[in-house]
Length: 221
Ligand SMILES: *Cc1c(COP(=O)(O)O)cnc(C)c1O
Figure 1: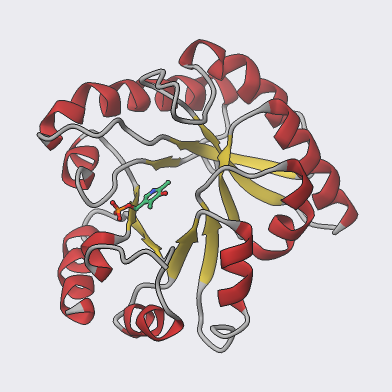
Figure 2 (figure 1 turned 45 degrees about the vertical axis):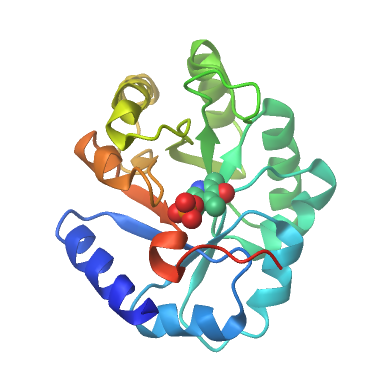
């Protein structure tokens, strides 16, 4: 089942030059291997600790890891050592610490700025009205590279109801892209999950984060 799901989703998305981030939270090493063997090589975790437990046992595979969940400043050092892209940068304070730890590790850390487009109290991310100011500050930090934005849409029973949120995210993305003037690397728009990724793609997403669409419903560990 995993291989077939992976194949179907990959086929649709390869044609659009979109990155599939395979969300591996709660999944076993064996099940993750099955997805990677089916061609999914960008893996996403939302906790540093859980990622740390998986990266070693999967080190023989040609994969890269993204962080997609909230990052606490005391875990930044570990995160910088593990992730090729930190998608969930949700404050200037966090970005400053990533910049500091990346400098210490002699690395330039790729990040996305997480935007809370719908203003949900339950979600992390900066407000759309703050996006330009924060993005400009991040751009000035030498050891991080701001590569785009990430957003998590509210859950609607009808995925199409998500469209206005994705459209607004796309507008913010394009505005920042112009303001920052570095389209050669500020070019990632991470939005869309299993339930709503088709709508996100229609609205211009080029990075989708999919868990249950590949692995089936999540079992709690
Ligand atoms: C869990 C998670 C996903 C994947 O969710 P699915 O509905 O299983 O596809 C995507 N993005 C984030 C930030 C997540 O935490």
